[in-house]
Amino acid sequence: NNETTVPSWGKSWFKFLALLQRSILDALKNPGILGLRILTYTPFTLFLGLLFYNLQDDENYESVNSRAALLFCSSSFYIFMVVAVLPFLAKERLICRKEVLNGCYHPITHHFAVSVGSIPNVVILSFIITLILVGMVKLHNPVQFFLILLLALWNAESYAILLSTCVTNYILGIIILAGIFGLAMPLEGFMLVPSMFPSYLR
Image 1 (cartoon, rainbow, N blue to C red):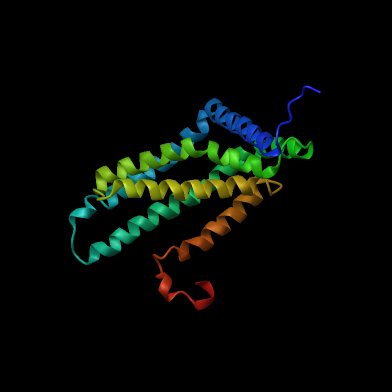
Image 2: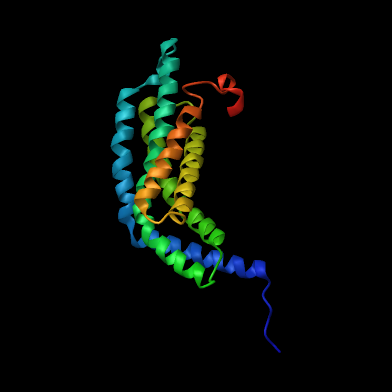
């Protein structure tokens, strides 16, 4: 027997790479999905830039609340808008379900591959948002803002991908995901500092 035995972790790695390649190719074949998100995010970012224009030049006490409001809007709106990707993941869910039932790969492998494949889109969106806000609001630490926004968006995107494989239709997924993000907003620390949270939430 001259056949080479491939260890289980090796097979999973090959499956992960194949799914990652397919995810990236799907994104390249459907640039309209990213383009629609850019068209949605850019006007709101320009609005924030105009509303908080040259905010960093203000050093009075009121500007503290303005800075907190800017960070809250930046984190909440962009993360909440991730629910818009669920309809586009409906087709992927059907393919994933068929392939998982046929034993092609484990659902976790699919989730990690699609999540990693979404990183380029998240990087582009985070860069555009940071570029606009840094130029208009004059943020002092744009690299930190970019990295935090990037991780927040990727985390939300991964939640959406995971949820899309668990629900029967994207409308139910939007409702559940919106509820999760809605519960997370009061816990971000902008409305109530974490030290003031009830003991059972700490």
